[in-house]
Amino acid sequence: MSAYAWGVGCDPDWRVALAQALAQATADSATPAQPGDDRDRLGIVYLTAALGARLDELLAALREATAVEHWVGAVAHGVCAGEREISDEPALALMLADFPRGGVRVFSGREPPPAADERDARGAIRSHTALVHADPATPDLPELVADMATRTATGFLFGGIVASGGSAGATQIADIPLSGGLSGAVFADTVSVLTRVTQGASPIAAEHQISACSSQFITELDDRPALDVLLEDLGVTERVRASRDGDEILQALPADRLGQGLFVGLTSGHPDRGIGFGDYLIRNVVGIDPHNRVIAVAAQPKVGDRAVFCTRDRQAARRDLTRICTELRAQIEEDKLEVRGALYHSCVARGEHLFATSGAELEIIRHNLGEVALIGFHAGGEIARDRIHGHTGVLTLFV
Image 1 (spheres, rainbow, N blue to C red):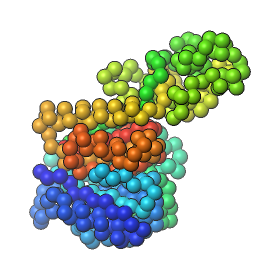
Image 2 (image 1 turned 180 degrees about the vertical axis):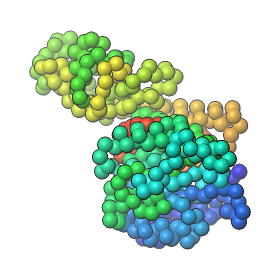
Image 3 (image 1 turned 60 degrees about the vertical axis):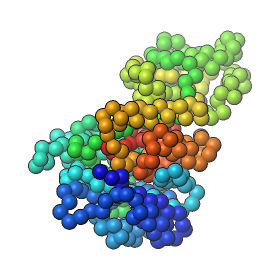
Image 4 (image 1 turned 135 degrees about the horizontal axis):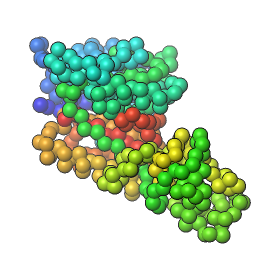
């Protein structure tokens, strides 16, 4: 088996950008489809908003140039391909992938995915995992993602929230330009996929159990006032911890540690100590109430959840991305697998914003996994399993 064909183009004229990407893909090592091939072909394309106004024409040109009928994709905050990360320029990245016959099916609100228990004539589960693109304007999006996970046999999704923009509001491609809801591709159990989530956060102290909360407010941690626990974790003096003066408390916070913001990681289980923050949902701490000793977070916590306060940290993010790549490489080597292609959906707040240099994340992946055929996009929220994450990267390998 050969690697998937992929390419990237960057130009204000979508035709020129597409020609650049196709020229690179044509020169790639993927074997072109032949009559009678017992496989399905899928095209994946991601593009920045500057090129999103011509999705109809772009899709027609892609089909004509590649003879690939089925395409999924999205308008994004930025795209990545190979070692390039492009955010502020008109650009597109594409991949041409092939799968066993019946191994992939495009879905959207107009074309629902197969049922989780549906099998094809060969006995394969038709909806095993799914690549999901989500429109940010969709109401109740977390619930919609969770419901989509139940429509797969494994409950495992990967993908991200796309940007707004495009012709007539279109933000996604699922064989046609679309807006709203979810779209993407479902894969049968004949398609082997490996996925990991990397966090861009570093823990401040030990985890706690939420003992009381309401709506987006955490009132107690470990049966103590939540604000008292947070301030203790941050090393604030006992005198200030007892204060009801909001300004005094804010001035006492360690600004050097919180320069990238203050977050809380939430999980309903007891995460394996070996996976770092892989099982945590990272959300912003958005406010404190010094009188009632309450913390407000950008989430809906539940009593019994585990919580750990954390900050965004460049070095921690590098270590965690290296960790997931190392885990994947070990599994590939142990199971004697071959990587055919990869998708990387990374938070728009990561990339150059967190790593200081453009393409740093992609270089870490390349350094640890070798010359992988890879494309992806910068997301407004990353989808992994049945949840929408933030400040994460979702790396998926087709093997």
